[in-house]
Amino acid sequence: MSIPAHPSSAWTDNVLDPMRQVTDPLADAVVAEAFQQGQADAVNTLMRTLIENDDLPSDQLPQGIREYLATSAQMPAWMDPARLQVGERVFWRYGPEIIMNLFCYGTHSE
Image: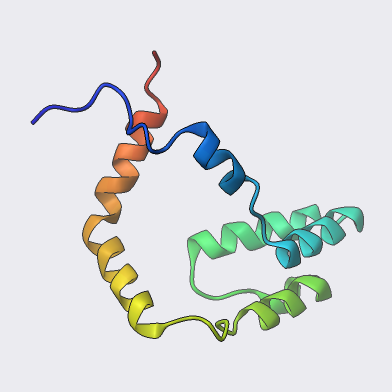
C-alpha cells in the first residue's frame, strides 16, 4: 500500500479557511467572561476534568460556566439520533486510525 505524497486537492486552504473561522459564540462568550473575571484557572480545571473523567465538579465552577453546561447539555432540535449513532459507529471503528494519521501527517515536515 502506498501513501500519497500530497493530500487531496479537494481540501485546499481556500476550502478549509472559512471552516476554520466557525466558532461556538455561546462557549466563546463564557470563556471570555471567565478570563475577564480572572477565572482562567477554572476554565483550565474544567478542560482537565473533561479529559480525565466523566463527572464535572460543578460546585467548583464559576456560575457562568455552570449555566453554559446546563444550557448546552440539551441536543439541538435538528439533531438526528440515527445519524448521530452512525457517526459514533464510524468513529469507534476508524477513530484511532484517523487520529494516528492526523498526528503523523501533522508532524511531517517537508
